Length: 129
Image 1 (cartoon, one colour):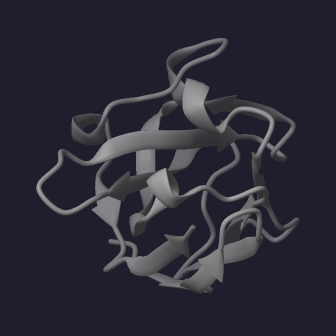
Image 2: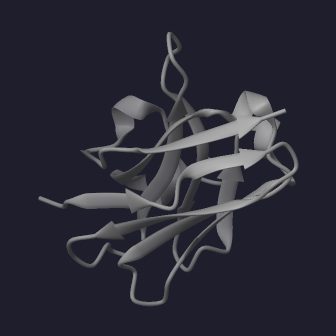
């Protein structure tokens, strides 16, 4: 089992930045996929980003490409999501996930929600115009 705890959410104006963190209760194996999802009220939980290895291999949902960056620390116990140039449509509860498919299922892989085993409780991000 792995416990995940997110932090770093908050309220910002459009164009602002936030950095989300997700601390794991134990070391995550290098080849295991980890990722971020988000869920707006009344919407399905959607993929945002995923990575494995040292963080250099990353995939993003189209709407966040060039604005969000997923990374992890060298100890493989913390996952980050740097969010720049935030937009009102980025408003959602953000969740980190672990225990995804090996190497995120291949080059460019962005696994589905059902492919992850472990989830955090979420951190709220609100972007006002």
